[in-house]
Length: 123
Image 1 (cartoon, rainbow, N blue to C red):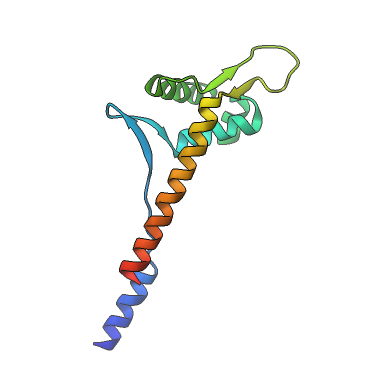
Image 2: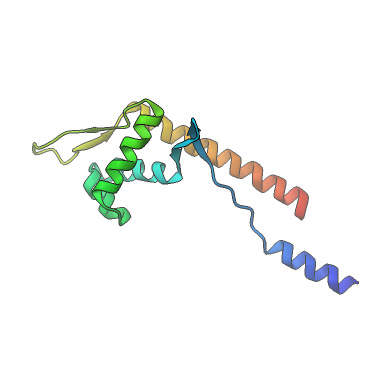
């Protein structure tokens, strides 16, 4: 019986808890880790085109995701500037910066609670 319990303990120790977090409105996903990553890439590159390339996605896909999230959230997330010599053609709005910051903080806190509960219940 000791051998069986030891094997069970090893099996449980190998498990890792996982959770997905997203924000919904009227049953439609409005903001998720994927949207957060898109906005972070835009902030880093200053361009929707470069963010899309960095993520291995098409510009059209990224643009569609942004517009869908904006409709569901009721807020503009990205400001675009066409032409000019400035490399920063796309900027996150202050609302987008706030949403990214708060979403990541919430996700991190939820992950922390999940880890604590997992350790309490399974270790």
